[in-house]
Amino acid sequence: MNYLPKITLAQLPTPLHGMPNLARSLEFSGKLYIKRDDLTGLAAGGNKSRKLEYLMYDVLKQGADTVITTGGLQSNHCTQTIAACKKLNLACHVVLSGKEPETFNGNLLLDLLAGATVHYAEHRSERDGQMLALAEDLRSRGRKPYVIPLGGSNALGTVGYVMAMPEAVRQLELMSIDCDRMIVASSSGATLAGMVLGAKMTGFKGRITGISIDRVATGEEAFPPELADLANRAAALLGLDISLSPDDFELEYGYLGEGYAVVGDNERNAVRLLAQTEGLFVGPVYTGRALGATIDCIRKGKWKNETLLFWHTGDTAALFDYGEALVTT
Ligand SMILES: *Cc1c(COP(=O)(O)O)cnc(C)c1O
Image 1: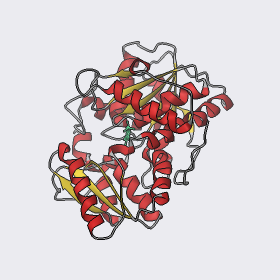
Image 2: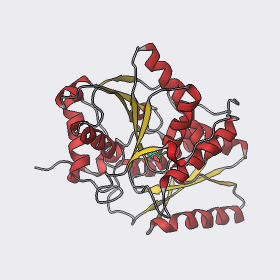
Image 3: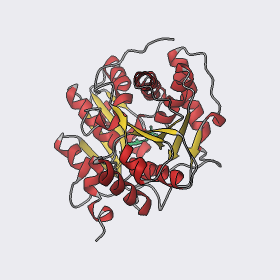
Image 4: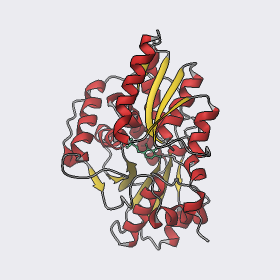
C-alpha cells in the first residue's frame, strides 16, 4: 500500500478505555469500551480531525489560500476545519444551513471567535450551490479557494479513518481486548467507510456497526452504495487491492428520531446516563443518538456477551446550544 502524506493536526493515538459503570447500570452481560476521538485536540475535538490531516495537506499542496466548507449550524466539521485553517494561516468560509440565530452558542460561537466568514443557507439543498458560487466569486477576486465537501467525506477524508483502524487494533492488542464489535455514528459516510476498509486492511475480525444519524437504507438516497463508493475510492488512493460492496456495511437505521439535530428522549437519556455513570459527555446530534441506539440494542439483548467498542466521535461543544432540550425539570 501507499502511505499518503498528511499534516499533523490531531493528538494521536486517542485514548481507549473501559466504561464499567455504564455496563453495570445496563446489566450488560458483555464488556463496554470507548475510543476517545473526542480528544483529538483540534478545536473541541472530534472525528473530522483525522480526515482534515489528509485534506489540509492537499489544500496546501494545491496552493490554496482559502477553504470553503459546509454543514449544519452546529457543525463539528466546520469548527474543526476553521481551527485547522487558522493554524495554517488560511482564510475560511463556511456555509451553514439554517437562519442566523439571535445568540451564538456551541460550535457556532467557536466559529465566530476564530474569525471564520459564516454564510447561511436557508435550505440544506442550497449549500453546495452556495459553496460553488462563493468559490467562483473568490476566484474572480484573485483568491485561490479550495472546497471541502460536507463532513470532509470524499476519498481523501476517508483515508483518515482507514488509518485509524491500525491504531485502534494495536491498542486493543496491547490491552488484550478481544473486540467483537465497533459502533460508530454515521452521516456523511467517510468515518464508517474508512473504518470498514481499515478493518479489511488490518484483518480485524470483529464487526463494525454504523448508527445512521440521518441516512436511509434504500431508495434513491440509499446510503450503502455511497459508503462502498467512498471506501473503494479510498482503497484506490492507498493502492489497496480490496473491493467493498454495499452489503459490506452494517447499519442501524431505526434511530432517526424527529430528524437531524432534533433532540428526543433517545439522545437526552443517553447524554445523561453516560454523564451520570462515567462522568463523560456525548453530544446532542451524533454521539448522543449513537450511544442511545447502543443502549437500546443492549437493553433488547441484541449484543449479548459481546465486547463492544463505542467510538466517541465528538460533538460535545454542541451540547452548549442544547441546554433546554437536554435538561428537563
Ligand atoms: C460528522 C460526525 C459524525 C459522522 O461522521 P461521518 O464521517 O460524517 O459519517 C459522527 N460524529 C460526529 C460527532 C460528527 O461530527
